[in-house]
Image 1 (cartoon, helix red, strand yellow):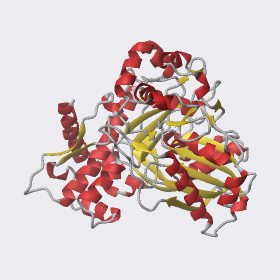
Image 2 (image 1 turned 90 degrees about the vertical axis):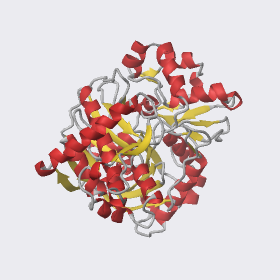
Image 3 (image 1 turned 180 degrees about the vertical axis):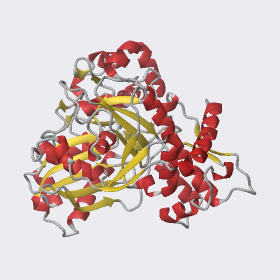
Image 4 (image 1 turned 135 degrees about the horizontal axis):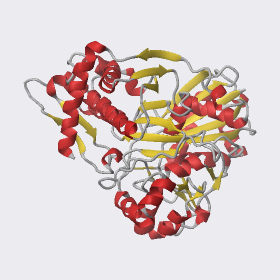
Length: 493
């Protein structure tokens, strides 16, 4: 039996096919080859077309099938990982009403801040575990206030993964995990927050049917199965936001375990068994994929918007002649601290760690006689690593101690400079594993199908690539550079 995982990322769609019996990857691919663009019709806006996601999902599945390395008819279940916090609105015919307002869009910040006071700070912290901030509920409120003609046509409100599952099955469902990341979920009543819905003037009918994360979210539509060359008995049995799914795919299931990613955005994600929240709203708490009414499993998430997207910007605008591997090699020509050049990587919208302020990206202390391409590449990678170390300090303030981080050996973690900078500045070890979002989504599908008896069984065979600990010969210089970087942040704030 085979399992298929679909990762609906910001840059591309990735698909993995996994052998359920041995949990080994058979084939993985992505579509398109060139990274998907983010539309920014106004400053602070960030949108993508959900119908384009669906096109890319279909093309990625067909591309995987064309490998001839497996029989597509043997795929029994599909799992979906998706970019978090995005807003997708559909009309009564299930058609998309407007582009998705995605995770890094900043337009609803003030709406969320006002709602934090209007709904009540105490209620938001203890029941929602977050300020409404810039999350999905606030984005929907922006549509209501600014595009009332569109809002009046809304039949369903959903997260990106709910939309893709709906295109596969012609059935719309959601989960408590998805609703919590949209800040619709009341953790005290274990229901959609009626207080929030009343405050914003939302009708409860716009929320699709709520089901467990690991469950049958619908059988594939016969026409879709035919077009994709799949068995018409295939079911969608798992949906989760990219960061909870990433944690699952790395075996981060229990309290005290920590996952990290450094893709388009950078995240440190810890699991707690209590309803934790940050009183300063710099990190956020959502229902982890293993959260139930009976056992709290709360994912406490710190996110930096501009991570891999900064590295891509550097490549496109400073070193277009180099591959990412060559960039990493060139960065090694510069010493720790990049000869005093500092990069702040916050050029992708309002940052939650700064309470939804947009402080922008910058290179500071630029010296035309000292700094060239190696320093600029290294400063960018150091800035990304330092921003994650900064977030780790915020997680520690909520009581989550980061000693060992688990990460997929991909994206920024392929850079020795980035990895070394993070572990030596934050004084943590990193366990680099052979796993990614689409692989984890496939394993989640197996658990949702009932093939695996438990979450631990589903991720039991993840392979370790390497384990890296802080290097005492590098720690002092790395932490000195990190402290200079933090001084620059303090001046901005």
